Image (cartoon, rainbow, N blue to C red; front, side, top):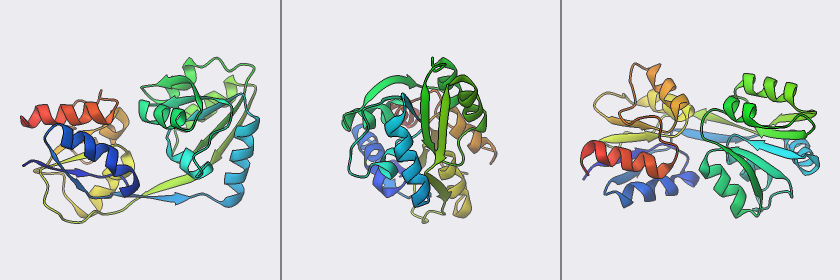
Length: 224
């Protein structure tokens, strides 16, 4: 039985856990991050900007839960990072105009927004280069931080592997645990780059863009 730490928040762990079970691995939910809601005035400003925009840009589905906890979404097209965020928008009845599978900066450079009013709710850690380029390329940008994530140290449950889907989770793991002796899998190159700061490489190629691909890659690595 190969036990794998799922390091995202408990409210997001079910999806990754289900994919691990499907490939014969045993998930162990060990949260390494916490989400901190933004200021009420910033959330209100971001919500109003999204309602009035021609396009909403989202780097994470966490903005959805913060701005529209009732499960709704404005009648505005969205450009998003990753299939998980795209699915979250679609489940709320929203329209996805573009899906980026790389960095936020790559997504921004692919958009035709010269005459568009753009709203981007985000976390403070969002790539400032992407925000600056989006501001330069669109007609008007309202960019508002609506949540932040903070690393937290996980419990010491014994595991054979760990999956990380954010840089904050990598930092959180390092607060109380070692990366040595554990098979590691990271979703995307930015998370892998954070892991390298601690002297480790992802054992599973960082090209994987979904929970399913990450789980399959880890299962193949360990022969599950």
